Length: 236
Image 1: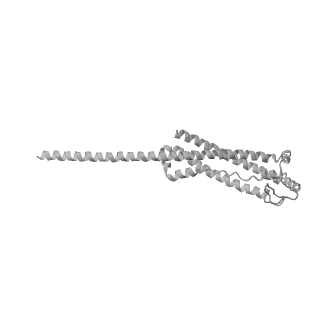
Image 2: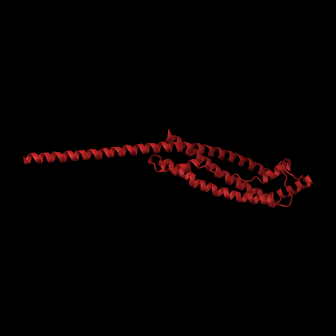
Image 3: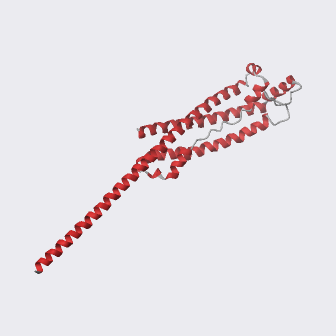
């Protein structure tokens, strides 16, 4: 009788342990399935953001390309001011436009990247390689670019003070309200400044500034195109 009870108790314990193991296994399987499902959802969400970022990078590339071409044109025009034959071919309005061309001020569109960061999916191990490179572009290089944009704005403002907001000649534009009384005399005053040591130094330094911004935009274009290639290789 005692042996029968011991046997029944042993069977009960084994059965209970078996049930417990099955329950634990079921919980672990459910957790793994849930984790797998969450990861699948996160990867799908990450791919959506990355596709949007790719479009932003394509736009950045176009902006950088346009700015580089525009800068090359401005540099050519400014250099031509040192050639007297070329200088005589420009109208007064054209000369004023060349010496005071303002800023380029290209910035990176980071809207899609910011939303991806806010979503918290940048911890995905599968996308770590790409996330690190996107972070370098949208934080390190973007801050570097913005610093030079501020530097350019500072010296473009200085140029405006020298060429536009002065009392040595009258500035004239296509939509000028007040016509200039003595057009020829006013042009002569402008050319005197263009040909002066001070004027030539301002033009020279503006060319250096344009070249510096071109170099930075060229780096930005290369980085954006490289990221597009990396996205394409990882997403396909």
